[in-house]
Length: 578
Image 1 (cartoon, rainbow, N blue to C red):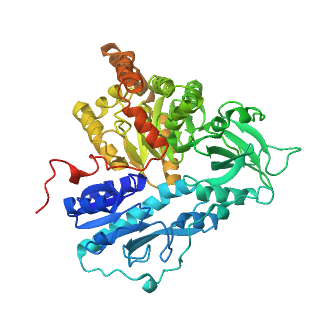
Image 2 (image 1 turned 90 degrees about the vertical axis):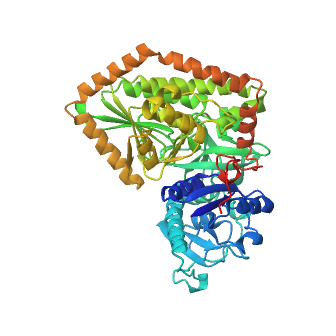
Image 3 (image 1 turned 180 degrees about the vertical axis):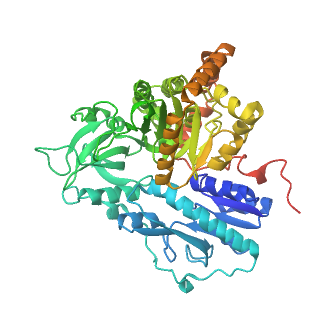
């Protein structure tokens, strides 16, 4: 069928649904929901058999839903209604939640039900739950609804007739509903409130006497705070600050000051945070107990069969210059450990998304140069990738439990093996960010995996790769189970098998010989210089496209049009179906 995805943005859910529907043979085109007239034009051009709305912030116009079946994905259980479905569920401590696919009608979220899917609700950030459980449930429910629509003999049920309907209409959650009482709220309550607002809109609060929105929290149970009171800011570590609750403390990682954008707290409040005592961790080993640690190393097994695991939990997968430099030091240290297999685990929700656009944009706030910070950041990313490419004494594995994008994909590909959890998306391209050329040795790493023609296609088409598709193209080496815990277990098992294999020494020798041949044919420094010559033009040249695109991305500007590589119906070569 021809299926039009009408969406507010090309977010992770929209990407995953589009890929899964295409995999099943459907013809997909995408239109951003900018205005009624734009959506109407898209429908007229594409003539869809079905419209699916994965992510909307307003109602589909009556001129469309009256004439076409429109399936709306609602991140709530059957009967749930309102724009803050996940927020209320997380803050209210629900243990089971779900996704419902409804047919659009005049009343929001009140149309007949085509399909639904449920899941256990973790105590986690809203953005994490949306990216994982909600997305997976939405894929399950939408695919079922599409099959039912295609069959032509399914009658969707009104919500009142659904046996599993237990939801209800809830209003938009306001900041008054989210407010934290630091003197009375315990750690669990504080975490629920900030988790329910994570990603958007954040919780309005105060830091250092300044009103702001706060995000990104982690509980602390190891440190003691003599002489402090609930609500006090008591320490700092890397990008976060520690604040007392009624019965403990939480780390706050990100804040958005009035008129600004989301930044690490120690950058948003750089001068104020410096006055706090530093709760520094010694080395890279994972600390037992509950504390916030953005880079952590651990080992499994013993002797010559030991395997090292390096995790780096960077918010939204963005990696600033400083974070790249710290991770490079951690990687260099891990390479000196007596392990012959080294696994880079990344973070739970993201492996890496490359350079930190928000930190780069922040340079303009302090009379600095975003171009200079871009240059510093990409060079730090390159140094990190080089450290991984030149790991000659270990078999290296990038194990992607979370999504990766742009330079993060090629940093992962710098390892010998890339194992991806089923359900994870990779976007190994750069051009969407103002025609950025890209670096991280991609001109060396990509063609040797997918060929010159395959590399051009990936960069030109700018489409997300599902875990299965990445393996089919040769970009990744294995697609593993979609269950997060089972994925980690499988990764550890596979890594231990490599470490114990009798041919490991021969495999390492062959790896070093292959790298030496490649270096003799064309040094890595030459690839880097060529890539950076393009990047220098992106950062310092006369064309400001990268800086404009970054500014709009960071400031969350509303889209003015749908990119042509997504809106196939707007391509000049598109022919209106008969």
